[in-house]
Length: 180
Image (cartoon, rainbow, N blue to C red; front, side, top):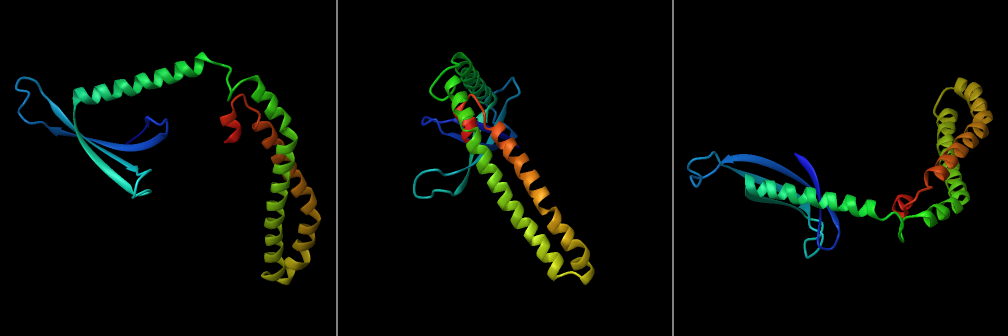
């Protein structure tokens, strides 16, 4: 089973799984060995009354038709690569996007650090509750104070590391990489 993407008329990228089965063809090719390919496409309906329903479509293709299909998809891929490489400046990529993402470094750092500290605090609190309420008295006496003393160091250290990573990784030359 292979995974293929194709471009529709509306430039929406869809992912399709297909299976290829080699079946003997009818006797239309007397001297050469011919095969008919039964291609099964599965996908999800995007518009209409049955939105979200998974469908499977089966097609009977000859080898010649299958080769044409592969050649056309390869040609489209090469056109996309040429078009992307031809223009290095545009509305969605270029030096202005790099400057914009550099300007957003403090915002990304503060938001990521805050989120990491929040989630880390919740996880730390759950560990503390588990040790103090559901474990033995020895856990309460020895581990809970240690957990309380190490809380600020570990939470601040991990939150700052995650904030720095998020601030650096969001710098990009294309807006699509930054948004993702």
